Length: 212
Image (cartoon, rainbow, N blue to C red; front, side, top):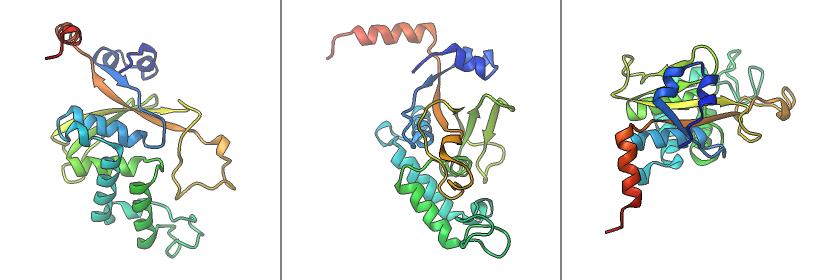
């Protein structure tokens, strides 16, 4: 994990800096899913060996397919309001296109966003707090079935233009409308609690102890 005061100054929160440090996630298109997988392992919801982006991608896609009515109205058609995939004048994604969307989210490195965060809240019954540089500073996401919040709370950070890499949502990106070079690239990291002094001492001695 990296402890970078400037990151939390960006978030305008000294309280967050005092409590959290961030684990740098690989900017490979899987960052959202990898960050949440790390949190699920940290919260003892998923065994560490199963805490992978493949696992969380599959869970998000399965949850979305099982709760299509909660997601379908908020996803644009593949071609926009006037595209071939739109229904009537609404620009909504068709059921067939929605199944393709979920399969792509599950099986490829396409970037995930708000729908996938909400799906993972429901799939694992957790609240996912997203810390960002804008307003509000902390955006809580709660399971649809538990509007009061999930059993446990995961923390991730959202960054814009952090890397010269990234993915965009395949269903709403058009090179003709917005050149790829102008897209605000987005990235997520996992936020972990800082070790207390006693915990730090214990970890140092553990690292220096002979293996049994």
